[in-house]
Image (cartoon, rainbow, N blue to C red):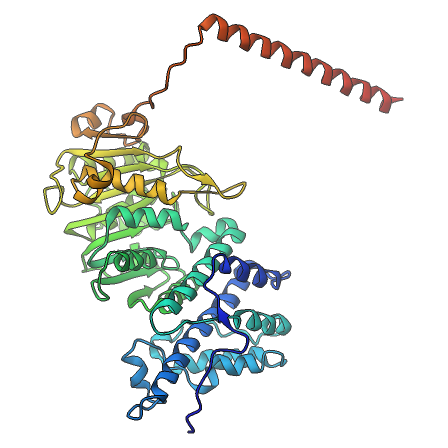
Length: 522
């Protein structure tokens, strides 16, 4: 085959400008029309994936053309660089050239099949139903044109970041428009970042037993790179029971070139644990809140229930015990659960929580602000578990638990949803790390101190006095309020005048309403 240099897609530009993800999302979302977001999600994300790996391939292809000893059609050249080989019929340039053809859906399906055939790691992962009659082919062509405006910047990793940012933004966008269903595959980024910043996965095995689209792994990879870690320092393992979501996770990892062992079966981690014999250094999870149909009756005597048999009507403590079971003796876990897990006494949950506290594996509890999640308005909290609170690289913390009340933190990003800022995340994480005796956090914040209304260290004896309830508000107390110098009599008089004025306005409004009703009655 003649060696003709490849160039970026026609009209493409470096899209890595501030807000480019939002512009791309807005353009793509306009084309959705009446199509359900849950269906359109796979159409758009599949094309983003195809565009990314095709761009990565073509950049490498152009590089190999300059090397007289290299063969740009040799698959091994790409595998050694952790790049998927893209057969000619699957390359983005071909799809872009045929974007206006009525057969574009079939061409995309053929491109996806070609990728799966050439790259066994992608087998069964990619969407292959673009040719279905119900899918608008004009919309498909326009979507290809939109995504063609974005290109990689070279083999220095920036291209991966560009496409990673787009993929992340689109996942976030689809979670938003899908609402409750969106929470099944996506954990908001600020929550994931807080979890990862708290547990600090520098090396070892990282596991998520209900991994969704893989957000915990993406953030762990970012954390490692930000702190100068090396590829290979982390080994990533995950399981997902929803096949469609599992495919999203696999594509998410491939877009970012993260080598991960993510497995699917429709029974899930409780009933078909894919990593039954493995232990992990770090576990991160956002399980379904208060799941009531998890098949408890089939697991009555399971070895994982070392702190007590979880109730059939709520899987919260099944998840916690599954996670503890999979921790190495020096392992740490961060888990998102509903607030009820901190205080519920129903169906033996209080006894399980008591046993976990008395075993001294609860390291830190964080109460989160409301409105953080797409899927639920149920208030949530974070559990941080440690199998070893002895020194183990940190200050010894035996018989202590750190409580953080972050309910007043965060800011509204729209009418219904709140996010934690970078400063919020840093403050919470630094508080935890300073308590553990980490020098970097102490350098930023100073030695750990209890802060009324925000954080407090409680002993096991303190927790026993509260009946093993782990709600941070019980321990941190009230924030200090600055006193003002206004005498009570003066303040009361002003409040009374305000109330009298408001009552007068209320009477006037009531009279206006009555007058209007009399007019209509005539």
